[in-house]
Amino acid sequence: MHNMNCKAMAIAAAGVALLAVSSVSALDKLTVAYFLEWPTPNLVAQVEKTYDEALGVAVEWRAFGNGNEMSLAMASGEVHIAYAQGVVPWLVAVSNGLPLQLVGIADSYAEGDNCVVRNDAGITQANAAELEGKRVATPIGNVTHYKLLRVLNHLGVDVAKVNLVQMNGPDAAVALARGDVTMACAFGGPLRRMKEFGVELMTAAEQEAIGIRVFDVISVTKQFAADHPDLLRKFMQVTEQANAAYAADPGRFEETIATAAGMELDAARWLLNAFSFPLVAEQQSAAWLGGGVQTFAKAVADFLAAQGQLERALKSYEFAIDSSFL
Image 1 (cartoon, rainbow, N blue to C red):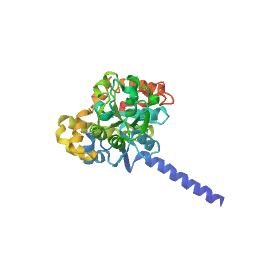
Image 2: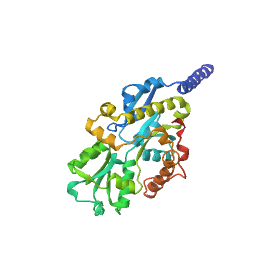
Image 3: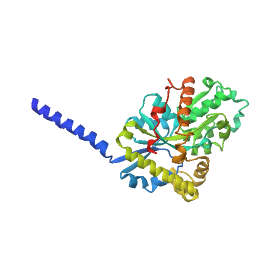
Image 4: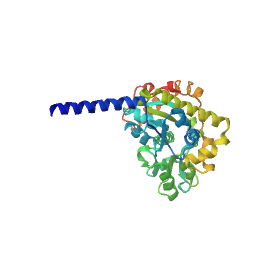
C-alpha cells in the first residue's frame, strides 16, 4: 500500500511537471480581455483572425465591464493579455502587489472619457460645489474615476461630500437619462449617449491643460511574459500592423471596427476621431514608455493615495513597465 501511494504520488508529480512544461512550451488557447463599445483598429485583426494565424494559436476575446475586472481575471490565470486596460486599474493592481506588466500603449483618448451634468441641474464649473450632497455615477477605481477626482479637486469641490455611486458606463448612462443621478461619468459609447441629456462639466481640452492625461495600456502577467515572450512579441506586431493600416486609411476599416465593437457606425466614428493610436516609434519615445508613463504613473499613484483611494503609492513603477516586446 505504501508503495502504491509512492507510485501514485510519483505519477501525480510527473503529471504536474508535464503540465508545467506544456504550459510554458505551448498554449492551446490565448485569452485576451477587451471592451465592447471601445473601437480600436486591432478589432479588424480580431475579426479577420490575423492574431490566430500569426500566433499559431486560437485567440479568445473576452469582453469586460471595467479594467479592475481585467486585473482580477489576469491574477486568477483566466486571461493572458488585457487589451486597452485603463492606466489606473493597471496602476491600482501593481500597487496592490499583483504581478502585472505594462508592455504597450493601446490608445490615448482625452475626448472619449468624461463626466456629464444633467441639463436641468444648473451646475457648471463656476458653482461646481453644488455637487456636494448629490449622486454622481462613475466606475470606481479606474481612469474615469481618477479624472473625476482630479476635476472636482481642481474646481474646489469637497469630494468626501459627493455621493459617488459605483456604476459601469451603460448603467451610468441610463441613470443619468432617468434623473437618478445629477452627473454621470463614463467612457466610450455610453458617454455619447449621456450627452443627449447634459453637458460635460469640463472639456477634454480643459482637462489636458491641467495635466490630466488618459490612455489605455496593453498589460500581461509577468508569468505570461516570461513563459511566452515570442507569442507576446507577435501579438504586439499584429497590433502595430493593424494600427498602421488604420492610420493610412481610416475610412476603409471603420465599418469592420464598429461591428466588432458592437456599435452603430456613427457612434464608432465619433469615438475613433476622439482617439489616437500611437505607433511603436511614438510609444518608445520620451513622451510615452521612454519615461513619460513612468513619471505619470508615480504622480497618479501619489494623487490617489492622497485622496484615500489607494492604500499606498509605490516608490516607482518602472519595474512594472517593459517596452522590450514592442
